[in-house]
Length: 186
Image 1 (cartoon, rainbow, N blue to C red):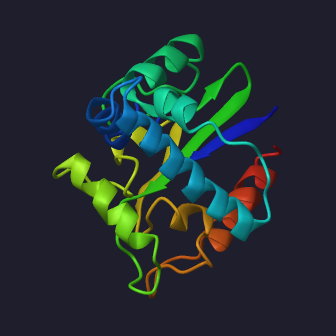
Image 2 (image 1 turned 60 degrees about the vertical axis):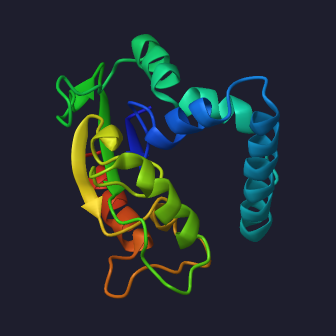
C-alpha cells in the first residue's frame, strides 16, 4: 500500500452517532427502530448504486461515535492529527496519508437526501459539517481540503450526482488526486 485517502471520514467520531447513542440507548426499542431506519436507508442507497454488501447499522453506530473512533485510532494512529483540527504526519512507514471533506449540509433543493443531511447538521451546533461529519473530524494526514461545498453524500457523488450549482465535481476532484498520486510515483 502506498497511500490512504479518506473522504468525509469521522476520524474523531460523529456528533450524530454520539447523539443517536444517547437518544436511542443500547438495547432500547428506539435503538431497534433506529437500526431498522438506517438499514432501510442503506438498502435504498445500495439499490441505487448497484451494491449488495450486507449492513450492520448498530455496528456502524458504535464504530462511528467518539468512543469507537478513539478505540480505532489508538490501534491505528498513523496520520492522526497532533492537535484538534490540525494535520497528522503525511507519511508514516512509507505510506502517504491524505484527507478531504465537505462543510455544506444542504446543497441541492432537488436532492431528497439533503433533508437528512440538514437534520444531521443540527447536532453540530456552529461547527461546519457535511451533515454527518464535522470539519475537524475529517482531518487525517495531509489535509487536502476540509471545506468543499458538499454534504456527506455529495462527497461520494450520491444521490443521482445532485449537488450544489457551481460546486466542484467529486469525480474531477478524485481524478486530480489520482494524478497527484501518480505524479508522486504512488
